[in-house]
Image 1 (cartoon, rainbow, N blue to C red):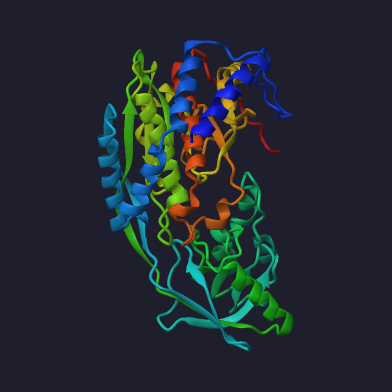
Image 2 (tube, rainbow, N blue to C red):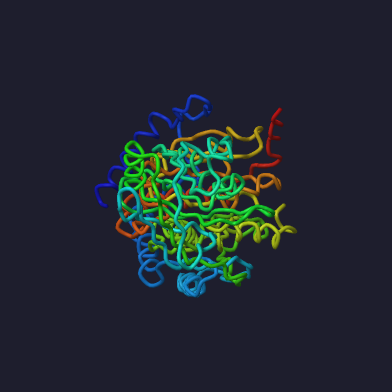
Length: 481
């Protein structure tokens, strides 16, 4: 870590001489010959230096994954996680720590078993998709019918699907931004409805992931009123490949599927909140969030224990400053993100009257890869000034990006309500190797990269808490024709 800090100091000197400019082709910052030598920038740089030298972020995620572990929304472990968060935030001496109740769907995974029973007997590794109904007690057996994508299934002749198990074999592309996930995830979320509408008895999908491990990726799926609810599961990538090899030899592949998953109604969970009270504008809020829940297959380290650690450690650095920033920094650890952004939706309803006082919001929910770019969604008239204010972040390896941020899952509804947001873009090249699998464990987190995230969030939150710019109104979205 000492060598890393020497690099930081060298970069600061170099940047002061040469200036900090984004190399993004679509946006440029003007008048950035030098980082402004202001009190805010000096404190921002000090926060980054402290973050890079601190293990607090890693200590927090280690505590969460070891002392709580998997924390499925609506489960007993979910409440254990809430109590852990309350205790942890209080131990860090934030000015305020409280929780707000949220009603969340509860679901039990049960067991998930599958195998090919003809013509080549082979066991399969699967995971029930979140919210799936069970098969009959004795399971079900049916022929597989394969589709490259969800769209191909939706376009299929019902006669080719009726009575069969639909297999959606959409591979997820690897990308630093994770954009391949958006192309393939529809098969998981909407595949059961599409298959049921065609008369299928179940749906299985190639896991929405980029790995080659024999581990299946779970994740939430949806049913539709008026459409039969059929069992839904994900196959590991190697097992999906094996089925493809079988289909080359014989079109009539029979799969046996047995799930005992069960919907348990509604349970109470909580958004857990901590605050660093602002010194002169305490009613105005800079929100930095993450989600506290996780899927139950791994220990929820990268999704989203890392985010919990990043925003909490960043706010703690600001909490410990000799002089608090003008605005309040609010850490929100959201409930039940995995099962439909439930905590995020509850937050905007419960805080509807004060959303006008939310200066800006951001969420960390993409693992622990280094942050390489910061994007905003603010008043276009002040966008370049906002970038100028954040020029010191370039010292920490963060490029200044565009004005098209969404802010992260649980704050994604805020721009439509007029709240500015920022997206601190993390390197997600390998994120979907582990996402929603038993492999989502603490060893996947690099402490150095995690510390870089903490530094970036601390800088962002402090700069925004001190800014004098009017970030509203946001640009209106163009209507799709």
